[in-house]
Amino acid sequence: MSCKCRLLNIGFGNSVVAERVVAIVNPNSAPMKRLREEAKETKRLIDATQGRRTRSIIITDSNHVILSAIQAETIAQRLTSDLLKMHEERAEGHNASEEEEKTSSRRKRKSS
Image (cartoon, rainbow, N blue to C red; front, side):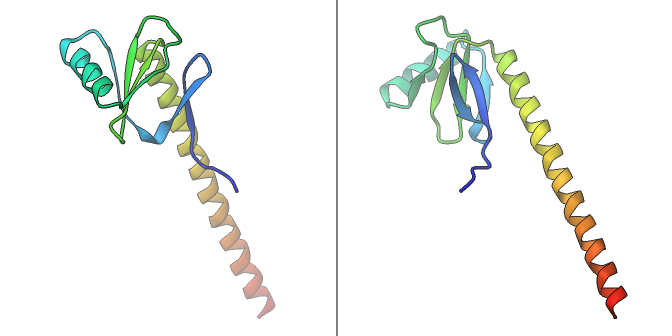
């Protein structure tokens, strides 16, 4: 069984499934501080800072709030890089399947 999900490194050996990330935000604004507190109260807060200062907040599609000690810009760059790789791999797979179809149809014509 293979998993096609990509993990996004959020620092210190911690990862999150890249496809589940909705937002990566700076933690310094008052609304983000409220979001963090609400998530803590409702048991949706995941602290992945390893005791360091929170430098980014990651929000997932399941409404979980993840704290990271890595800058938001750095995590965003990693996410963008991973998504580009995934898109390229899908395009390569699509091109390979088109080539297989062409080869298959040529063989059918030759055998007829």
